[in-house]
Length: 466
Ligand SMILES: Cc1cc2nc3c(=O)[nH]c(=O)nc-3n(C[C@H](O)[C@H](O)[C@H](O)COP(=O)(O)OP(=O)(O)OC[C@H]3O[C@@H](n4cnc5c(N)ncnc54)[C@H](O)[C@@H]3O)c2cc1C
Image (tube, rainbow, N blue to C red):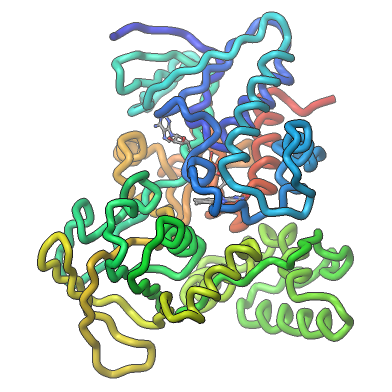
């Protein structure tokens, strides 16, 4: 198929971010307009996060705070309750239900849109965007051969496949015993129940993998390896929004030293705990300050933070639902799950059932070799746009259309979310929303932040709401 069509507003990617933008557009456009939403597959609203079919994979934000629109945070719990599901606002709900909610929200917005406002859904992949926009028209090329002309483009490309871990020698991560894409359905399911499995990473992705293995009756030993062996902390059983006022509005104003920021946050945590609150109130209360604090740090201090503090931040900020944390702890207590602190050095694949892994325990002088039946990359989605092999990213990169940040956290956008090119100028009509905003705001990967970015992006496209 090779035809040309013209759509005014094109949203590429229908994970949470693309759906949030499309819904805002459908609600706010007046007169005659077409919103074209393109996704690689027809599983709209799923993406990596909500595409799981496992009931053990729970949201890591309480249901009462997962509404798709800022100002209507209870939207998700209302949806669940309207379907007779017995969940409360502080419950951690299976992620697959959230995908259902996003789909439902899109259909509702479509049904309520102005008469002349159309939603067009395409199952296709955008593989190129022409480097220049002519007369305000941007040309998008799809893998099917379709060419789309658009006056406004929003890229909501989401999370990219994890990068294979660095090893001394080349390791083929496309074949057993190595598994690179832990989210690809069927990968962990192929493993024999008694296989000894090494997970590279000890974060929430590794938790997902452990739960998947346990659910399928895995009996063999499972090890998780990361530099420090730190595990994501649990949420409170009844997770509540952080008590207000714990983090003052001017907290750390103008503080550009990462050591000073850390010292002051620790002080605040001590003070907060002494007065009967919880450390989570401080971490949660920092959330709205994080973009400012990140900005204040500057490049050198950010690198210091990423080198030394990242695992501590991640394990306290990106917490697990209590039920998940408890299952992980039980697996550790009964000896099936082992947490290793150390550095992966090399992998020597013997055959499809055996990899010899050389790793060095933290603080040890000598490395050691351990054999596993399978090694799974659980380092999480990649944001390193210099290495991502996604066709659209490669094309944009090769044409200098991406201003990639120096910390490999994502890309740069201007105040109206237009992507900043390599030469520092913004693309005229191509905007971005999604986890790659982390480069600019640091705190930008979860629903509570992304829904606000989606609204601000649409404000920039259409003008603010009156
Ligand atoms: C495993 C996991 C669990 C998470 N759990 C939570 C949680 O519980 N709570 C929370 O708040 N956040 C969670 N997050 C954070 C998550 O990043 C956001 O909540 C959100 O899902 C990001 O949505 P997105 O649309 O930006 O990206 P994605 O969900 O990755 O969606 C991007 C979509 O774009 C499509 N796409 C990409 N490129 C193209 C192209 N060229 N052409 C066409 N289609 C394309 C992809 O196929 C995909 O469907 C989780 C993240 C992960 C990875």
